[in-house]
Length: 413
Image 1 (tube, helix red, strand yellow):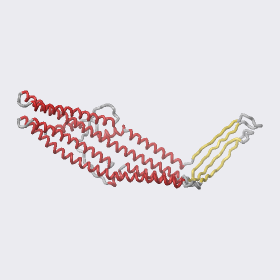
Image 2 (cartoon, rainbow, N blue to C red):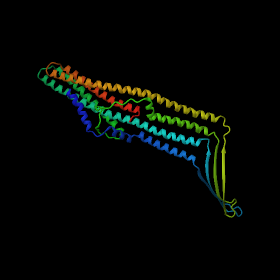
Image 3 (cartoon, helix red, strand yellow):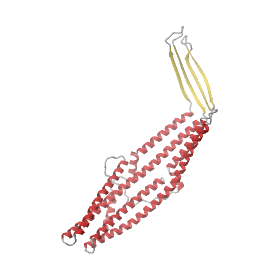
Image 4 (cartoon, one colour):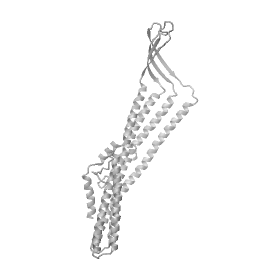
């Protein structure tokens, strides 16, 4: 029993002296994440699009110029002509298209911001999982190494007794077979640890097989989260907010479609500086004009009705998607809370079972040394110990992951 407690304490002491905390690891994963980087670019793109659409409210200035030269003389006319015509124009009314387009761009900007938050939540969960997986793999590896040492110690005792003629060779072969199996398990556990280490390093952008030490461990006390109500989750979840802005964007898209079939009014002020035609003296003159343009669609064979119906269909799809996300959240929260409760109960139960297995191992080993138990009894106690010990590690890992999963589901910091 003391050996078991010592092993847990040794793992905790090793972790405390480590360098990488969970918060630091999350930050390194955020910095190295391509998904988050692309989400930030999408925000910049949406912001630029919104600014571009806002220019639709402002007047525009343009200038047209033309210069021509003839190679055949016509009487005494000059061989060249030019025209320079600046124009200031302003859209007065475009059927609501300008404002609807700008509002849609604003909606897409808000959506991209919440989508980035949702990606960050996902990356945080992946970082937590990788962090706790390394912690669990380290404990598995330490446990397997300790298991090999225990069997080696037993093997040495049995071998000594066999050489003295106190035990049969079958006992020695049983222990030797168990030792070989334990060493095989150690190779597998080492491979699992290396895989978890590769995932850990890849997520933070470290591609070298660097060994890591953690300042936190699954054997540390992790507080049970408080259960969050459905209404609070809906307000917190960025994917719900992104879906709401997508619904609004679809509504503005319908207005834009309808606006293209509404009357449009624009006004302009223009001028020109040009030569006379024909250009006899080379003199120029200036002219100015005010224009008012009105465009009224009259008949398009029902094109407006069909176009608006298609836009409304996209609007309904966006709304149904938003509702589906809300429905899924309710089940996600229930499943997440159930997994959290179950893993916590398993963790508590595993601790008691570990105490029993440790005491049984100590008693079996002592009894064998005193000649009151067989090698088979000791081997069975050892197998039971390693199974329950690994179950305890698994239970703690599952609880740590369940906490991270529930934090992701509820969008809790």
